[in-house]
Amino acid sequence: MPKLLIEGGHTLSGVINVSGAKNSVVAMIPASILCDTNAKIYNVPNISDTNDLIDIINMLGCKSNFTDNTLIIDTKNVKNEVITSSYSSKLRASYYFMGALLGKYRHVELYLPGGCQIGARPIDIHLDSFEKMGVKITKEGDKFILDAKKLVGNELNLRFPSVGATINIMLAAVKATGKTTINNAAKEPEIINIADFLNSMGARITGAGTSQIEIEGVDFLDNGKISIIPDRIEAGTYLIAGSLIGKNLTINNLCSADLSALISKLREVGVNMEIHETSITVTSPKVLLPINVKTLVYPGFVTDLGQPMQALLTKCKGISLFEETIYENRMQHIKYLQKMGAKIELNNNIALFKGPVNLKGTNVTATDLRAGATLVIAALIAKGTTKIDGIKHILRGYDSLPRKLDSVGAKITLVE
Ligand code: UD1
Image (cartoon, rainbow, N blue to C red; front, side):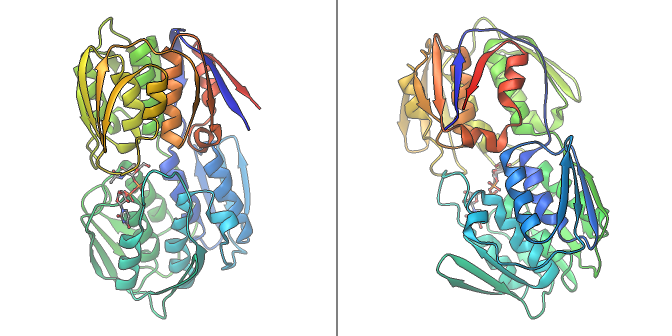
């Protein structure tokens, strides 16, 4: 099992280039099969989620070429195969094949999706919405069978602005008969990116990025072309690291506008930042001020940066409060931060941090993707060496993390 060894205490200086967004590419690849002959996706991050999804489209009959962050997909021979758990259990985003295959074939057979164990992660909003579009859903053990004699547009009122459900509905609705309206839609930047990709194929989607999205179904989709937006979670992770141990650390190829909630929290902490449209240069202040952070739907503080932000709270002077409101089981990293010396009182999804403390290197385990990122940041600021197990989670979502951190001065080694 690969591990990361990180010797803490080394200042980070120089430039880190942010890769394409994991949360976009995981929907783009399933979306590509809606094309009749081909799709091209640029700025694709080289992460294991990308490769796991390429395996699924290849299994469905696509021919794909992934070189230099460009993914070219020949979709001429796509077939509607059952997606078995050996494929779908590797990542949660395999559920986007529900929407994509419904749109293309009106029929899907897929085993329950996998992904990080950060909560119950129900998909009721996806399934209720499909049913309202005429889909009959049956479950045989872990297998979902979705079948629509006719897939028809409808007005859908989401009980919560789920990113996954909003995207899955768009994937099905682009080829449904008539108009679909999604009310209380998720507004994340990734939704706009995916709508742009579908529109490049000939879909008719308006309102992406607002809470009401309208989709007029069309008969044919082809020649999809898109560049993946910068990964705001990856950018935020490095910005947090730079806030703790950076000296003129520039995070490049990002979109500052997508990071406004994080930027305003880092300002409250007293972090020095030079902010441009596509880059931010960060230097750690002498004293970090305590803050309160609560995760919320976009444009609020994103749940995926909640865990990494907690590494920073261990160094804020005084009491900081953190509350996770999106997922119910996203605090598994706390015991490892405590093992490293952090003073944290955890009460369900609220954590109280007393700082600043000097963290010490020890053996820890990444239990999920962002827990892993949190432990990497903690290790970068800790005294001594930290050994992080469970690296496969980190490699699911961070392109070349060891190389990028090494290039700005971290002492980090990936041990196979
Ligand atoms: C979530 C974040 C998103 C972020 C992404 C990064 C929110 C609302 N979503 O999206 O901003 O970019 O992580 O990984 O902050 N839910 C249901 N039923 C459903 C679908 C979802 O109850 O059918 C619940 C989930 O269990 C969860 C919440 O809604 O508690 C958010 O789900 P969703 O937005 O779909 O999650 P992600 O796509 O992971």
